[in-house]
Length: 288
Image (tube, rainbow, N blue to C red):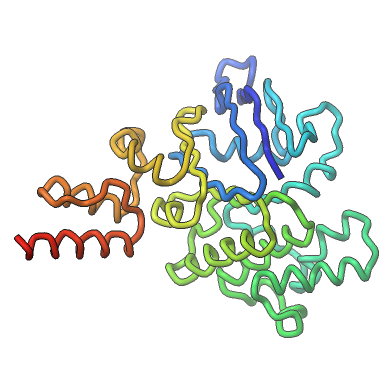
């Protein structure tokens, strides 16, 4: 499912003395089945952008199209939007409220007016998709689970709506390294198996470099850069630091090695690539 954003502007407290422009004439296109990494420091506008993509916020001006479906149309039924675009917000476990996992995941599909059998099928499939065994977990309270498992339940609740676009806003915030890796692996699997368009907001540059096909960097309500991870990180490392963002640790290592005189590639993003380059350079030095 493709997404087209045209000249999107959002002003909080418009017309008031403390009005602030969170989005400033933003235009972009996200292609069907893309995996987009959305990055930016606090106040960059990325969360405001996310909230426009499923109709939570209405723009001050501009339009958003989801497969030619204009979601900024006045009077549009929000249910029609949320069937297409699902959002998992930061700390989604705070949104869990039912007495069992099964009921919590079934809440969204139930609001669509689906038949009971269809709801049951969606719950089972979504639990399977996030790695939770239906028979083992369906009757458990969400509040008995670990942090990572609660995130899985929250994601399953969104998947059960069968969205064509899945947006995740800092889905690993507050998790330990093991839980973080599990959630990122889950998101990667969902993208591959379900052929969803994924938009992932995260502060982890290393994970973004490994997962995303397209990187969007936001700064002061505008798009600073947009392109593949190699394009964005290789050519703009100095500017990224200027606007308060990190670069992948492996790329930082490559830059420092180049400064020391090592002929290392400038676009290294993974540990494997770094290992291969270091071995190549060391072999070349031994021959000399």
